[in-house]
Amino acid sequence: MGREGEVVAELVPEFERAHPGIHVEVQQLPWSAAHEKLLTAFAGNTTPDLCQLGNTWIPEFVALNALESLDPKVADSPTIEASDYFPGIWATNRVDGKLYGVPWYVDTRLLFYRRDLLAQAGYAAPPRSWAEWTTMLAAIKQRHLRGQYGIVLPANEFEPLVALALQQEDALLRDGGRYGNFQSPGFTRAFEFYVAMFRSGYAPPPAAADLSNIWNEFGRGRFVFYISGPWNIGEFQRRLPAELQQTWMTAPLPGADGPGASIAGGSSLVIFRNSRNASAAWQLIEYLSRPDVQRRFHALTGDLPPRRRAWSEGALADDVHARAFREQLERVKPTPRVPEWERIANEIRLVAEQVVHGDLTLAQGQAQLDARANRILEKRRWLLDRKNGP
Image (cartoon, rainbow, N blue to C red; front, side):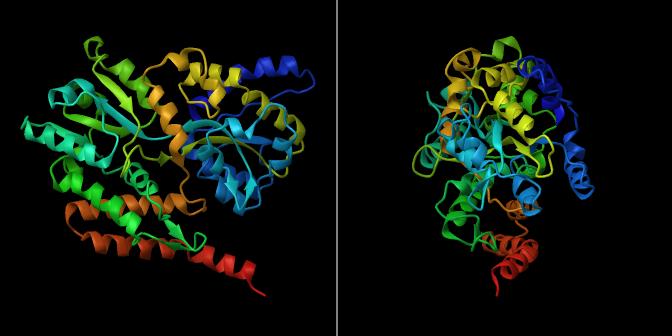
């Protein structure tokens, strides 16, 4: 999909030279249409042999019985070593105890920050805990600089709140993914901390946080902290002027009591159950999973590799902005592995905005989230009860 669909075509010729009996046909899909096209292909029994699949989509295609379990292939592979992958990323590909995908590239969220502005507030290093973070945000606010905030939290992004919630011991869903768990003590802590950033004036109101150009506003110093993903390394390098290139840095996400977890995202490579070329497809997955090929893939796309060995040398090892991602990837957690997760995540975004606006209290928002999640999960409960019944 997307840019990866363009780049993988550049990697295929080397694979075909090493495997003269195999010809690979690459079909590129836009992300906006990929989900619908894959479901249509499944319904028409015309799925491809292998596919790039966003790891939050994997549970849905597993529920459709569309994917082949890869455990036997990994066990016999001389190339793919599960222990070399960041465990939280590997876990996103396991559903009901079985492996259905091999991580291809990884994504997570952490802090981008203006270290010059942080230094002006009196701090030489980024925060490692919520307490340190709050102290820094308060110090930034006390400088009373017009139009400057400590952090920006756009209303159209659910990931910051979900990342804070994943740092808690309480799961986001309970009873095997049958019900929402948004009134748990853990989610309460995360939600209170998130909402307090707005109510304390550390973050601009949601309506003012939907910036048309986040890079220009970051360069102007309108905010010090921004929670984002690895694609913005390249964006800030391209979009900020030369005189600002030494002023920004990345840091792992702070946790409640120390360095915290974040979201395990990215894309994986899967094989469809009706593939007539499963053996050849697996050989291509092994090739694309080699550390040297992953380093080349990173050089072409900026996507981060899921294997530790791919980070050990080359440009990625020397990238000062990528180092925080390497550290953060050791502390990532998968979101709930249910087909309905993306719909639930959208409800988290909508309800959080209502609470921040003051339309709902925190407790009302949590009750709303549980009610909405429970409605979304109604079919899942029915199917699971039927499966486990007499």
